[in-house]
Length: 447
Image 1 (tube, rainbow, N blue to C red):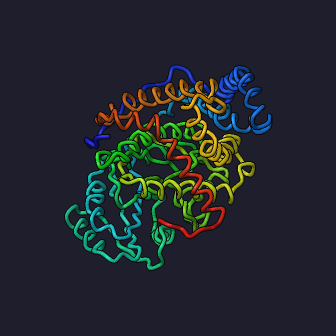
Image 2 (cartoon, rainbow, N blue to C red):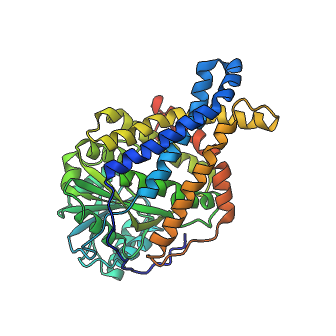
Image 3 (cartoon, rainbow, N blue to C red):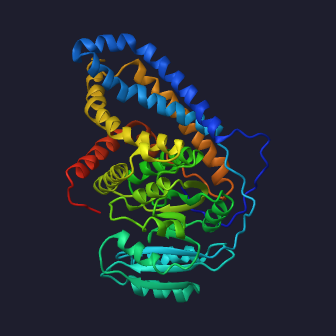
């Protein structure tokens, strides 16, 4: 997406009618379960034929993983997105004091530009920036000092010798004196109104909202074919999941790349944990305290996506591993809120879905080329219309309710979109399975 960045003041129109979150939840369930029962009915001949090859229980397990559950989840997503309506922001120009933490390890090439975009924020109050140099061996400090002078930024540099992003962030947390703290990756660029939207969202939210996740988009989408594909993953896939979770007040990852937290809440859960997915585990700890986490689609930041398959696999296997860490520490049934139980419960099913997709769907796709339709059948095809509908809704929403209001434009990337639709999951599921195995066998962490 083209970061044609200019500050903007979006228009907010009063809602004509209101449907409670609880009612949206049950309406979405009713429709998605109806779709599930319809799919099961249509698939009975397929199950019967497949059972003669692999037995009935195995047939149900495989078909459930590649058709029933994905179809149900896609239907739930579509209906939820149709019913979603962001709460109105009344105070669009807050002036609360904010501290911005940047953990930096060998960020000489990027951090100057990152700080430039921090300096260009249209936030009324001066933002206090704390950069934690996490044992860098390059000239990160020099670039931070240069940016501080060039942009008249209030920057403080701290040094943390212990390797690990969580060590750096916890070091910075000790020096936070403001009620709100924002984390930002050292290679991430902020839209000029990003901080304002994050703060506006949290101060216009109920008191039990402890964090707001920003919206991440890909900056370097022209770097390689892999970044072209990931551009659509961030723009449609990740954004749709974030909106779904935000609707039900339980965004499962207030990502460290760009999110806002209430300082006292982070301190109450002892800061960022020693985990490969430190932001995931932190968010689940916050949710476990009966707090809520929102998502603000207008608070946009642009990040660099991995440019090669190798780096992509490392990143996404880390994400999968971090999800397992979160599930291990806070079980879904231990979450105090109904919506959060449900959302984390879906994550509990992801290893099963990824394993079935990797070990059954991919071989089944190969068999289908030879005219053997044991695994790839009619019910699996029924998942596709829901997928296109959900992506179509997200594209429309992102274009007219986010990008248009922020004076951004959507880059033309047809090849990336086609590859994203046809092949992305063929790579993503095996990579996720590898991440699950890494965590199961407690293999060495690789960043």
